[in-house]
Length: 140
Image (cartoon, rainbow, N blue to C red; front, side, top):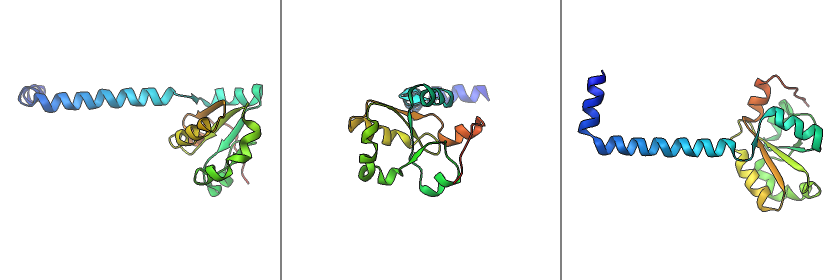
């Protein structure tokens, strides 16, 4: 098996080089995005308790009602542009953006930052990670 791998590498150096280049670029992208403005569940809890951070849940209302962080405000991502005025009074407070898996909150984070919000963070892992950590969820 190893012999076949070495033979393949020798016979297709451009293909292997391109694969390694794409692999390195992907790893760098993931590392950069996983740490950029993201907070863990424990860091989010500290922000809420110590600095009165606002939790903004951008999931659809059905998912929000099925379970959300206590005190969270629900503004679905699809309606964020038209409802951003509701958040104007929190421009100086930390805002934690929560989505389902922590992947789509980056778009909302960018919109809020562009709108002049000073401290915006995304919850790494989203509600999925919050629930996996056995943290409290409110159901309405």
